[in-house]
Image (cartoon, rainbow, N blue to C red; front, side, top):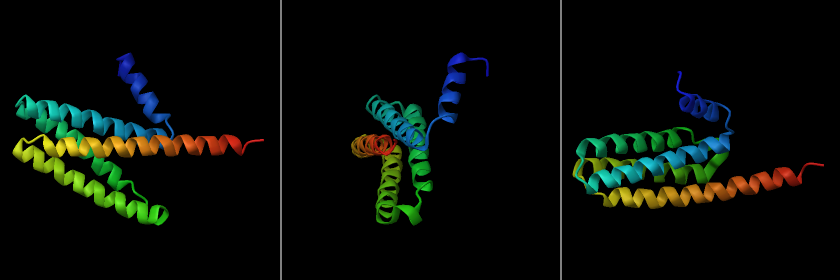
Length: 131
């Protein structure tokens, strides 16, 4: 791994907190969803499939990391949403229709914003608890 940028990215991920990794996953899913929408609109089938696959894998990873013992009802609801989103990715990949992707993008952006706010609140609470 002689590429300095790749080394930086690897170090950034390896040293990131769980919260930061969660946000990075959402950011990646949003990025690949946007690229898939662009590929759909430009009728670039290979690019569409590649980017949908990347976004799908990230959403699947988000689903796989849910902790139902701790998360309870929230985890259950997120699981349903992630499964729905994976279905939307598949639907769009088969049909070439960008509408399911646009729906996923909105949901991912909403979830990302919610997690950003939750992480900020957690940090403030942790800072407030310090002497």
